Length: 83
Image (tube, rainbow, N blue to C red):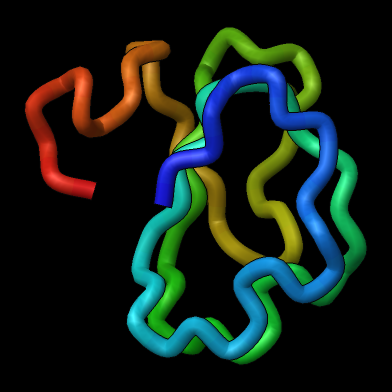
């Protein structure tokens, strides 16, 4: 799943129990979100975030999911990758 730039918040159970979800790509700054956004997403292994986004600086995980800092601001689709 790719969350585009400009998203300011993610609902409380937006991805609740999404069993097939394995990766999230955030294209902008960290949105406001309650602590249960990814509850039940057992296969979610990483959240990709832009390396230059200040709101992610110094963090190693978000909502209990490890962060991967990407140098490119392009989405996986723009980079030619499947999401």
